[in-house]
Amino acid sequence: MKKIITVLLSAVLALTLFCGCAGGDGTDALRKALEYPLTLDAESGELAFVLTLETNENATAKMTAPRTLSGLDLVKNKNGVTASYKGMTVPLPEASAGKVFALADIVNAVRTALDDGTYVTGRDGDLKTVSAACGDAVCTLYYIDEAHFSSAEMSCGGKKTVYNITVRQAEEQSSAVSAEQSNQSKETVQDAEKSG
Image (cartoon, rainbow, N blue to C red):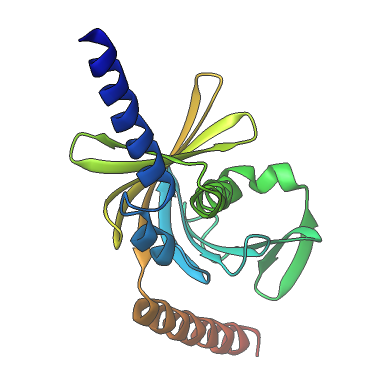
């Protein structure tokens, strides 16, 4: 009897593992929701920004809070990190923008794990979770469904960085870009009026 139960439990476990890696756990829709380009509204503590991931190597963050950072644009690509404000661009040490671009690392780690089948899914209360290794850290996305993300978290050595996030849909992304361009045009006109 014990042998039969052991064989049945082993078969159930094998099927569960196989289905989990094959996308039978609903991660196909999640993978599609995380396709590039991807724009996220994010906040962590006093820091708030709009993060756009063009590829796994190219990300842009438009700072919205605190007020002293509002209007600052950070760009991370294979050449490093730069900061731009009112037409002036300077290179930055990557660590200085680490908290902002750690969110990009979380999303990229989960995306890669979904593609490779090296992720873990779970639940935390009413939220679904998908986790992946990211170097020495564990990266987790919390979501209600594939279109409604709640938060992202990176844990390493007992230290956690948590972001409240919202994924912008494609139409929201294009209207946000138009609004941002309109605001920049208004600021340029106002600056020109002040100086001239």
